[in-house]
Image 1 (cartoon, chains in turn brown, orange):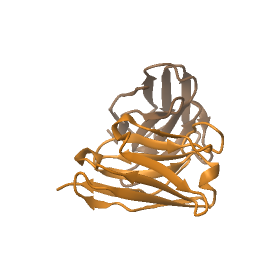
Image 2: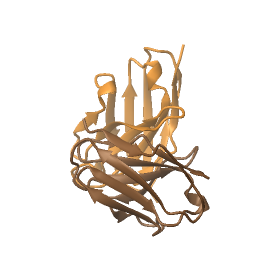
Image 3: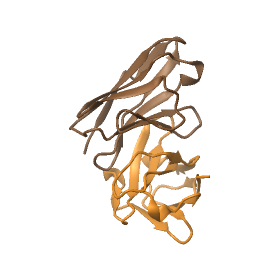
Image 4: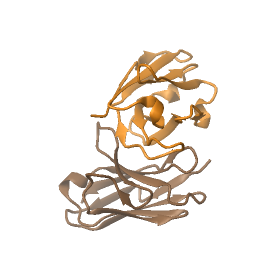
Length: 106
Length: 120
């Protein structure tokens, strides 16, 4: 089974900051990686798919890059609505999620 | 408009069975890759099971032999039959829609979730 490891587990940041979350797969998954945002009490929301493609309606301050085993999600200028937990997901072989990164207010 | 509405959760004793349903509207469950994802209280997301457009089914190791994913194409409803439930199966269970291709895909629509609590 493919394991997904995110870092950091928690990230403290301020509005306007540039933040980056990383995700590493235990084996190569090509570009078959997605990123989701989840707020408390809500279902996850798809942000990025195929490592770098922005889902329709998602603000352009979100971007993704990477391939193979190493990936990153960047928020170019953190907005108040972005404080949430973010998950990566591989869909190369079945599926697996990272453990999540909580972005909290500094 | 695409919508997914889960039902069937509740309190169940260890060893019991429960069937979750996910009613879809705005698309056909038979034409899309469909998935169940769960989230234990205060924990992260865990992929549970998927059914492909061709009907193949896959499960995470911890539920193999105990859970069965299926769909009723005529009612556009996805199911998760859960047996031999364990305390560690306690979670909010989400159904989610993937793409309409033959393989896996990211999950672009999610239901609101249904809570399953396994406790004596």
